[in-house]
Length: 430
Image 1 (cartoon, rainbow, N blue to C red):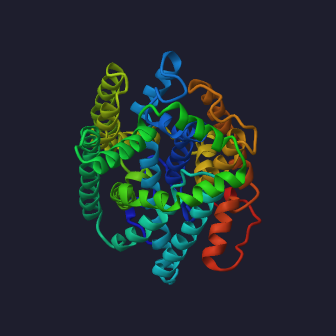
Image 2 (image 1 turned 60 degrees about the vertical axis):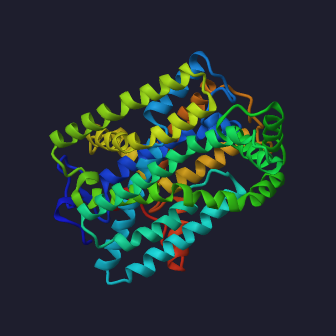
Image 3 (image 1 turned 90 degrees about the horizontal axis):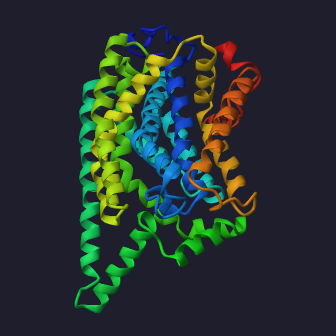
């Protein structure tokens, strides 16, 4: 395996295990579990509730507290951390292909092509919030940076994140323009602005009772109705890659640099992790807390939400992600029972991500238990804890008997165009 000497062993004992690096699995495990903290709202409630607690699910007491804790500590940070790990793991697979004398382009692009197919299948058949199709497209682009040095990856990544911040900065300006445009003297332009403003309100404001009723009826209805709806909006769903692509690619490059530099493998001295933890959280937490306070003070006004939760939050996401990565690596204890279970969940992140969609849509959608829209925001989190427990229990037990998680095996077999060996403990092979 062709990796830098810094990644050959961990500064705190996070050693390379065969073709695995334990630290990467541990951080990935936390990320895939943490993503559910935010996604649970998207599974269980109308779309606008994700951004705006006044839209649905409660905006006082425990419900508001849950929203604010998630906004400050987790919103966008776990997704970003997952993107870091995707980039690092992608580069590790490329390095492994080179070491084996295989074509890295063929190996990587086959993986991304099948990931796109699996992602679209997930989007259409299970859940509208799929990120796998985006990762496949962006991952194919990230391949062009595989031979760059860590500093170049960091520089390009920072430029891409900066570009995303600029794009998000237009969001509040667009809201202002739409609000003014509904008074346009041209009836056609006024109507266009009114439609655009309604769509924006439906996404991050307080939707009308009629719109909420439509979303509730759709998700409490049949599976075929949901699939037909997702198919009708497939173009719009795929178009989000253009909007978030720069940031996602930037985060993947940071992950690739984190592998090259040893940061994500646990190879840094502990004092260095502590410094970056204090710097990242020291910048990010006060900034997010101030933005959260502003939204509460302004009662989650549409323009304030667009400004605070999207435009102004964007520059502070990266320091928070770095802080989280450092905190996880500082707290992880190689050989510890909890660390081993978290690492197993990370090793099966693909299966756990898709498995979460299967479980949550069964609980909340009409073809399952039909809980959609029936629980408050705070009431969702015992379900999250139960799903975390299931991940920790079943991932380790599965890998004690098999080499791959079920969906990891499927992805690997499709990319290699032949069934891969499944029997045998992944843990003993590590």
